[in-house]
Image (tube, rainbow, N blue to C red; front, side, top):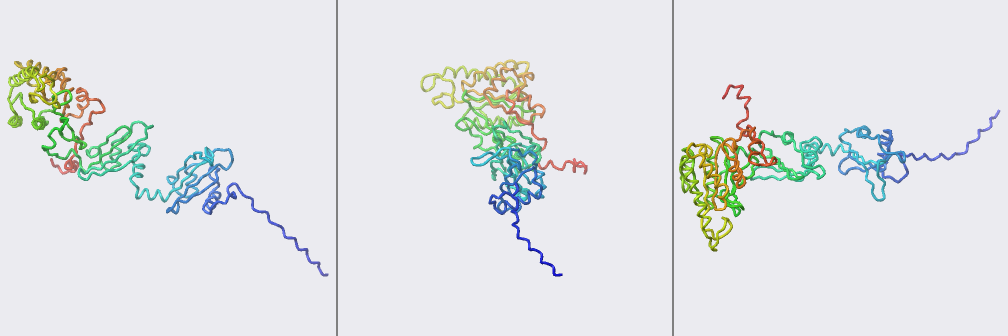
Length: 466
């Protein structure tokens, strides 16, 4: 039997694929569509969808995404760096998630996130970071040596052989917090090498890294350094950070006094030599008295107007100063009037006089003349400045209990810049506090060793060398 042919079914229109939330028909660019397919295949991490994806120029694997929650009106709460890193097969440190701030014409808030995936940029940053990136990663990061600080600039001083780094901390973070030991490690030095110095000024931080410690250098004394300027200032020496330290031959109150403190052999006589030179270069008359004969003091005395040894000589010098003050108080100036001494005022009939008293405390303990020496020194310290008479006291202590009177110590301190040499580390704070120095200006003790020649101590011990 002939079978009847089977009826041909009428062609049916296939329904268009339904548009998913993850793949909306919004004319997105090809790159965004590719990222959307990947994001969908990874299960829409954090229940989010890709609104826009942007590649980073010159970085084949880096991109940024604008995400929103897949459910309207829900915040993005479950998305982590690890979720994104797993989706793109990169390291967690290569992912950065940001809040989206609302802008005109675009939504924002908790239902939106900005995500940056930057494996190429991070690889370049690890291998060849810019100065700003290096500072942010190694120093300004949370838990770093100067947390929250932002790199401003780097300055190299070739002449002084020091590199300065300037950084800024946002005002809302308050005063910068600096961990000097961690900072030294980040800069590949050691805190005790004396090469690293930090200066904090408000919200700014200056980090100075020397090629070799300034403490291991010798700065030659020159006429240029020792000649007082128009304000009576001259360079006494250099601080541990290589910064010039200045002293004065006069102040706005009158002739400057002086206070030099150091243990025996600590360098007081050399320091006095610098001050004598500065006074002489200013045009002052210089006199020197010491409690006991000394080779260096005697050599210095040859360059002064008067030099003598012993408590009696010191007492006689102080009597001269008191007598001169009385005479000068009655001497009329060029305008016919009597004035207090002022280095900036013309018409003064007398020269400034600077008197140096070495080993003062020993002389002040003398059985015959000690009481007179202390009494006259107090008088000169109170009134001398008004008559162009400066009193420079050198000794081994500034403590009242060691022989100083409170009045003399305060008068000298108020009208001079004290210089302290070779203080035992534990005494630094107490000595500067006794001098009335505020805590923020009290220096740290010097490092135990700051010369390259001091290295290799362990090897010397092992070889039995001295």
